[in-house]
Image 1: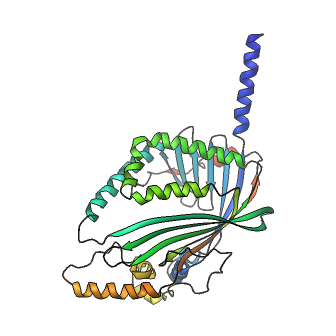
Image 2: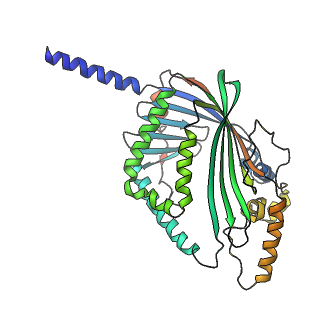
Image 3: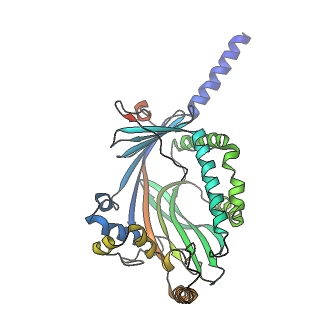
Length: 368
């Protein structure tokens, strides 16, 4: 009798475990809808077919089954397997694939950390511009309501900014992000996705171990420690499941957040005017992007100036200061993301397999 009871209890536990890892799927459509970078890249359309498609909607389908999750687009698939501790990348156009383990991710993170420390040492040179950096994160609920994907939603606005002041010129600037988020209170099966994400975070954290050494990375910028604490505190204000989001990324000089999409429509010609095809042909895409940013890319920070030309440097600083006084927030990019077709129906196991005939290739170096 006791043995039978133990088997019954074990079966019940296994049944609960299986139920906790039920199948789930949904679709997500993301589209770049505006900003100066969109205008700039569209100007490359004469030279690049991918540039012509930058404003097209991009559909991603998320599949969850047991301890695996796959994100599938028309071009690629990414498969997380927590049991095998691997991430598999599949190129559906080139018919190739590669896999990277959590341990390899840890090694790449360690390499990245070492490179960052080396870079910080070089930047400590007295001739390099210095900046005081601070972070600002806020979440607020507006009380607005609307139906999205057939679901009732309420609005919350997340604002983030990285503020910097050049200690030599006192020139100020900020990289800002505003995310207009519409949340619904409950979706059947969504808890499975959250449970998987928690397991994935725990798995990756265990494998990262001391190699990630986040405390040492944050110590290089003490303001980031407080920023992470503020972010965690503000994120707790987001109650519900995001169904629709409009995110804007841009620059501002007065510390004020970028207006949310529901508060101010995107100007038809925001920020720097897009260059012509001829201008792009004469300049590299990288320099074009840098010139699109106010003050030559975030207030002139990070650019080394010739020490033997002090007059030119002073003139540039004065010009930048004048621009700093008259500049207005500039939206570099706006994207819209909509989630829909949530389902708890059984998911086919084939979504987590590499298609037959695909060639395995070496994983790229992701340690930057």
